[in-house]
Image (cartoon, rainbow, N blue to C red):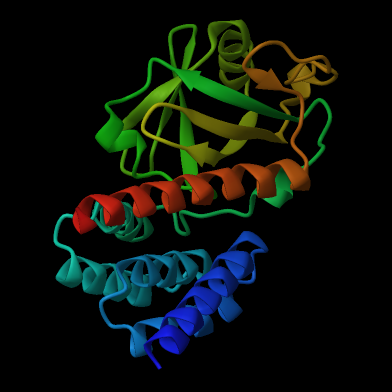
Length: 249
């Protein structure tokens, strides 16, 4: 009987992970919910449930799942990190300017109008790690430099000068841009920037070079978005497994 129970848990766990890798978040909620009901000390299932709810934008349910994970394991790093992210999302969503999240797919393959860049001179890890794919960010010129801030006005990083100086000049000339996070870890952040308005006085000037250079891509594909989000989730799985192994010792 015990072997059957263990087998069922392993089968449901594999199913839950597969669904999340495929982006089938509603189905993933159902499987992970079944897991925590049958195995109420399964920290990984609570974390997966929280992640699925986050992807669906159901932040209250996500917060509840992560708090349940901490009740089982007060030192679980995955739950704590995502509760910090949720706190950031709540603050940003109540700030002026409306919705803090955009759909990255809206930025795909806008040649000359869309660019994907990695930031340098990053903010402290505890600030950067709170950002997730789809978070809206703000562009701000400081002299010839272009810096990036979150919705609360906190500094996140700087656009590479080889690219940022051109955008800063175009912004000062009247162009307008929207930007969102593609991927974010404690050590790196990639954003998408899109031209949404071109000043008549700058008509014909490309915002983004057609050819890329290191740290820059002229556009982003839907496949790349899915791949980067998958890598982010796989990193969480590895960390969660390592945490469980440490707890078992």
